[in-house]
Figure 1: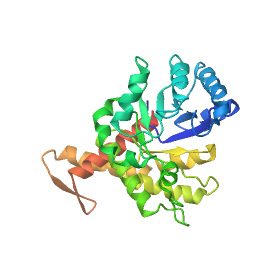
Figure 2: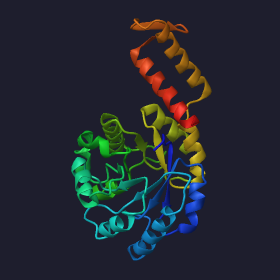
Figure 3: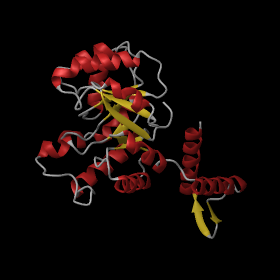
Figure 4: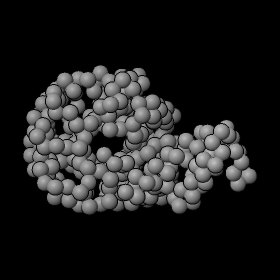
Length: 282
């Protein structure tokens, strides 16, 4: 898949929303068979998702399946086996062992997987293991909804919308787990759909910290997320200047640029920015 900035959830039992989600500007849509669908509607959702996947689509389509151990998972896999989703999202994943267990069920059906890697207490202690299955991953994301319920916490956020210390820790560990595995680090949803200013600030923090994309709950969130994860013109120009400076002095360990010292880590970051900008342009 191309570089993803925004991944938009849409309930699998709401097929009338699929086309709108695909036309929202999101870089990918996530057709949800798990939390957004009541048990009585799982079969209906499955059928709607498979039907939509059979048609030509303009954006990558990821399917969030039900978790390992769910009575619905086998039916999800059977239905999707010939439907060619671009990736599967695995909720309540607990490290590389969960990816191996899912692969055992998938057999020769092997789309890339995006684990939601922090939804159980045990999952936190398995985050480093994703390096062992990095070749099976299309990214790694985390969640702050199931985990508080699992441990009896009353909230994951403070009144101003920021995460409380335990969940800031979880977020950071998920971020480093993704980078350790060499896969995109995808930040979780921002639940206040009408708070555009809050979302913009959240996206800015996410990109500052090293996330490369974010999950979206509503099409209205997509433009803000895309803008926040797209390098600005001044940022691209500065990155190009760094690359050009080191190209002109290939043996230098550190250089002066615009009155400031730059060294090899700055070069790596500049190259990453230029690569991202080119992928988005294409």
